[in-house]
Amino acid sequence: QLGINRSTVLNAYHELKADGYVDSRVGDGTVVLASAAGPPAAAAPYPLAWRHLFSQQAIRSQGLSLRDLMALASRDDVISFAAGVTAPELYPLERLGRLQAELMQEYGRRLFLHTPSEGIFSLRESIGRLLAGRGIQAEPDELLVLSGSQQGLDLIARAFLDPGDVVFVEETTFFYALQLFKASGARVIGMPMDENGLSVDWLESALTKLRPKFMYTLPTFQNPSGSVLDLSRRRKLLDLAYQYQIPIVEDDPYGELRYEGNPLPSLKALDHQGYVIYLSTFSKLLFPGLRVGWAAAPAPVIRQLKQMKQLMDLHASSLPQYLIDRLLRQDFLPGHLDGARREYARRLQVMHEELSEQAGADLVWRKPQGGLYLWCRLAEEINPVKLQVKAAEYKVAFIPGEVFCSEPPSADFIRLNFTFCHPELIREGVRRLARALRESREA
Ligand code: PMP
Image 1: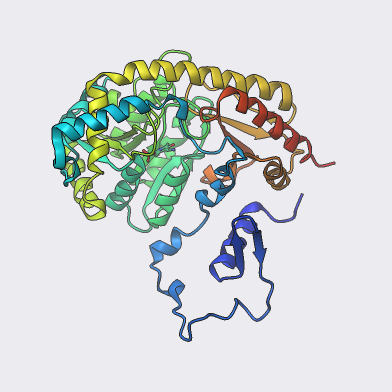
Image 2: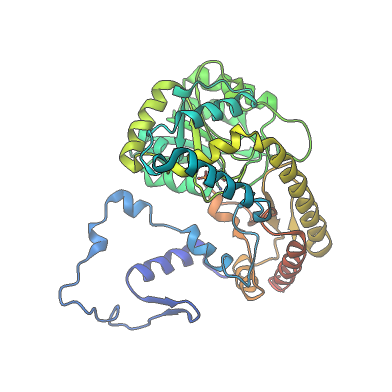
């Protein structure tokens, strides 16, 4: 084991980079410039010290960049289990081409004009129908179309959090939520979890003591752990929210991607007091690049979020809204999701079997009933720093677990996505990973 942890190394790396000591060019790798005289001489005679001008919020958001970690994963010769992306083979390219041509015919130049900040009415109606299928009643004025549901998290952070406020998140949670809440200056507290989701018993005393502004939770196929909050805990969580008058932000990108077992109602569907702000997205139902997600919340909350969205980007891009609305109106989603669920269940099974065969002694995981990820604990003998180096050498990518942790974790984990790669690539990727794991064992 090295005597320092990875965050320290990564932080040092980012400091060096910010100060101009790190030089990296595609193909040349990374070079740390060891000059004792400081960064290389600047070309400009009066270089502006930009870094000292950044706001407190900007500095708080500097930390670790997932995109940096993903740089390896996006190379063509690397098998990537890193990003949480749906299978590109399933994207309905022909239909999208046809629809786009039809929309051009029908709407002409209107397609390229501004649309309302809350999203086009027709799409909000369609989303309302989709939500009705999830047992959620939402009128168009209780919906806000977002440029991806991650934008909803940013808007919520801006709308509710001042520096020093407390926010509760699950102890492992969505990386960007963690970063956004921290960037707002809030105190981010991790709620303990087990295989049935967050511990509601812990919450009772914590809510009295810490009074968070809101609780952020992913009750269904949690990212990264894959866990599902059971029904009695869902009810208890809502009761606690009502009792202590604390709203809940429910993030539900994965609820419809269930491959086994019976569906559970979302918190939003169970909430009859209007305490839940619900986020979801077409990124996991269809594909991520069009950047369309939505929030469903009581009308006063939607009005406030819309106001802030207007300042941010005016509205979600117009053409993607029309395209997705058309797909929904043609009832494309149910059939598409049936196919996607079958394919993802198969890919999950392939990864699960191949890992059991190849890496059973080095990793421990529970096979999830849905979602996109396997959350794997590393055997104690595996050196996680060495593993990253070896995985890069064998060209297989994953996300190290610590980036999802709100508190320092007690064990090391990795997150593996099983939906992006087709089964043959999954097999090969797991073989590479297994080799990397074996070679990362401490003697
Ligand atoms: N929430 C969670 C839990 C996610 O995993 C993701 C995407 N990985 C998002 C939100 C963001 O989705 P979008 O592409 O709609 O911004």
